[in-house]
Image 1 (spheres, rainbow, N blue to C red):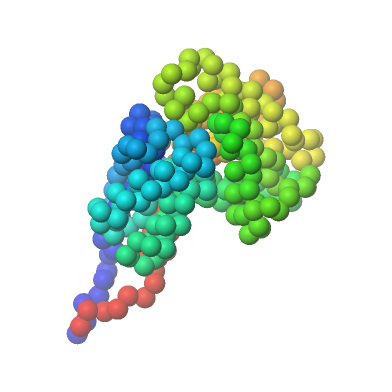
Image 2: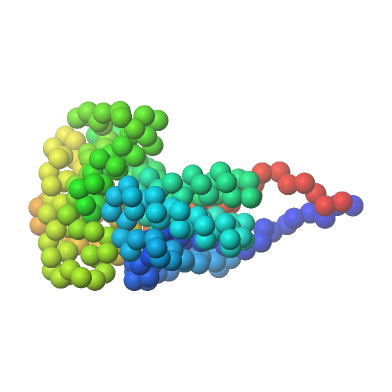
Length: 273
């Protein structure tokens, strides 16, 4: 007689911050704790060590953070985790590395960028011509994230977005990810986020409104009310609080990686005889 698995073991998720800013990881904790994943889900957070940059602002930073975080994972038994969420809002190479190279096949892995795209698409109604867009940090990310969205939606990073596309584009604040936690006056941070939010919302029309905004940086975790405040100033409280969706990538990523793990467990398992 075979032994039958009746209830899966508890789930262990690693939220991996590939930059070396512990304060940024600390800023994710309230969001992580706000997601109801159930009592059997453990979430652990990890900050990459130096020489990974404290803020990922360009291609060079992406490459260095990938190398440092990947070396750590390979030396610390990544198979101990049931799934890994990469907490960098970018097309981060770590997502592919983990999903394809970890000695646990397949290892559920996603990034907060990929999860946010799926969340935004599910929250906007194309029949009602609703659109979504991203508010992010520096100018570099406008092209990087636009190409990433094009790849996610069409499989072609160079695909153009026309006026009828559900994607309204990317607006940058001119800040770095680290600026959200230290070094910049909070009033300046609020002002720049509001300005970028208003520019993005202005891309909508009466017939094709921007009804979903993605916070395009892990450092923006917890700043949803700043975006809603900007929307209220331009479009009224009803729109800001009842009609506008604001996607937090960490929250979206945790819910998605949890489902990826659970769906993977539905695959037939070999019985122990």
